[in-house]
Image (tube, rainbow, N blue to C red):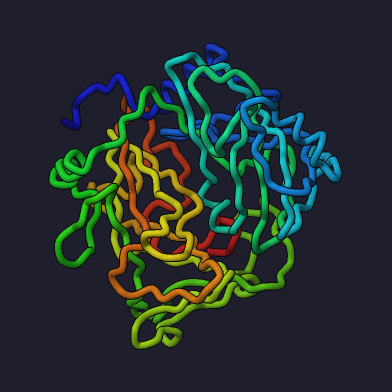
Amino acid sequence: MLQDSFSVGILSDIEIQNLLDNKFIVSSSKIISDQVQPASLDLSLGNKAWRVKSSFLPGTKSKVSDKILRLAMHEIDLSKGAVLEKGCVYIAEISEHLNLNESISASANPKSSTGRLDIFTRLIVDYANEFEFVQSGYKGPLYIEISPRTFSVLVSSGTRLNQIRFRKGNYLLSDAQTTDLHNEVSLISGYDGSLDIRDGIPLSIDLSGGSNGLIGYRARKHTDLINLENINFYKREAFWEQVTFNDLTSEGLVLNPDEFYILASREFITIPETHAAEMRAYDTRVGEFRAHYAGFFDPGFGIDKNGKSKTRAVLEVRSHDVPFLIEEGQTVCRLVYEKMSSLPKKVYGGKGMSSNYQSQGLKLSKHFIN
């Protein structure tokens, strides 16, 4: 099965480059080579953003620009850099435009670093009734809703906050196909008991604390802003409190309402190069909290030089309204696999590709000193 050539599924970096070369994707700025990822394209901010009264969808009869005219409070020039304040909602232009044919659709998610900073983002397109989805055959501009939840951030034209994934058809694996793939390549390891493959692979949170007792991080309420161009720059102690084994109750970890946590999965994850995966962000069936803003996992994620996984999923977790108890082994989210349309030229963590989160344990965004 791993040697099959797929005609439907997630488009690889080779096919994305073909879309660029044939003007199915165009940009008002130069596309940088590392924007093309193994199974997605990083989207870059354009020159304009607007502070808006509220989040919105354009609906089937309106363009995004029409709604901006009615809801905008202030226009912002991103070419000079701008601070996006936490607790506010912004709409920004994306430099890339789409000219898709009828066989290709797309979906978007925040980049990993965006999610780990608690920056809530959603893609919006003209005449849309839902966020993050682009219908097949779409021709038009892209916009991004940005709402920093915990930290105010400095962005500018070219800043990359989200990513888009293109697909031919829709080839999510069934439970039986996921089971077969797991039996072949061991999609996850490090779990106890039998694996409940149902609407994806279940993941739980690591509450063991390890040798240093560290379980996760809780964001501080009042901090300096973060310049998203500053990599490996900020001291984590100024922005994060440690959550340790001493913070656990006898039952587990209690999440405080409206506080933001960085936690890690107990399980180690493998994404074979023939597949991509997506973490489903929120499911009321597992509790009143949101796990994982950034949902895309690329082919090759978690595979070391020996073909084994040493990489955990880092989960961005926020409880809603009430305190919520997470216990050891409790399913908090599920990882859904989908076939690639073709094998990527480069894989996550592979030669010639910069990968910030390969072989990660519990890790904050790349902006903090490692």
